[in-house]
Length: 376
Image (cartoon, rainbow, N blue to C red; front, side, top):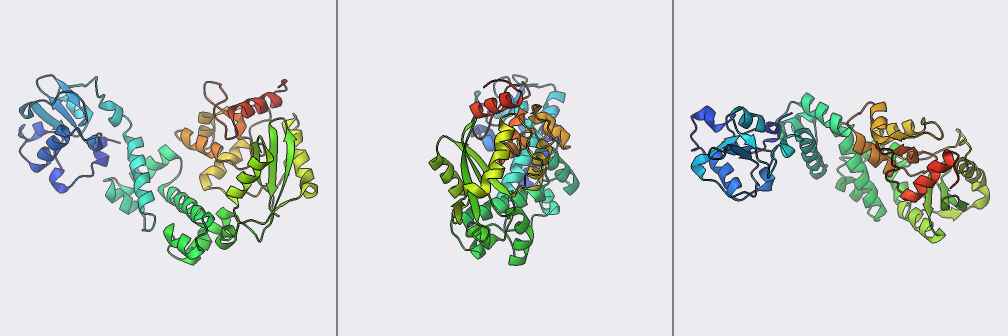
């Protein structure tokens, strides 16, 4: 992908590969607009073009902080490669290739922002391709190679997150539905019932129809909360105090019929404690969790990592067929709602260090040492 792929300017700003292809004359409106961007050091134009200075033999990004050259000495190029073929070298101060070299990532970021701002509109690949001057096939392939999911899956995830936030805030299902970009109630229930684990109105009431039971336990990592619906465990959390744990559960299910039930939760609690003390987890432990398609792929793979072993984020990304989705894998680990049961603690940095953990780096280190059979 080239930076020309994100050239989102008016027709008047369209240009040939360089000024030189037009005889070196900078007299069209597009060149004037670029010159104004250079004078203003407009960072919003970085990655869209570069300007080269004949008196120095250097090319820069529009926002370069160097002294502005004379207009007569400036030539514009759509891409750094074109400037270099013309004999110019990259500026060591603004490093224009730092933008161009990550063109795919920058484009996908822009697509994500566009999707987030247009969730209430049809977002077809044809429309996105037209907006970002790419073929639908190329845009789809590039987006998936960077994030590990398709534009449609990303839009669905954004809508779901917005819906959940609206419902938690107490908004009606109808208002939450339209605010999140769902076009009809049938579409809302079709798309979200499986992801929420319940219908939207039940989620709004905090799953009151599927009462949440919970219990506390002393664990090798401090106080632990285990919560479950009738379908299975929906939350495993760690904190220093029971009050903190209850607040965390309340945040996820603000209107739920939360009820402490130590007796009913005892078998699951004992299973989890055995796991943390060095024994294997009961493979039949039921889970009731909601996930995007990508999260589910990551979490399913994590459950195949052998007890006592670790994998890097990059290795997990490669294992699920998305080798460039390392950051997305890290996000999926960070949003895992059932610590230990889905062993996100077994995913470490490529360097071998423990890396981040939702419940704290010290807890992750202690859990890895327990599984490795070492004394904490």
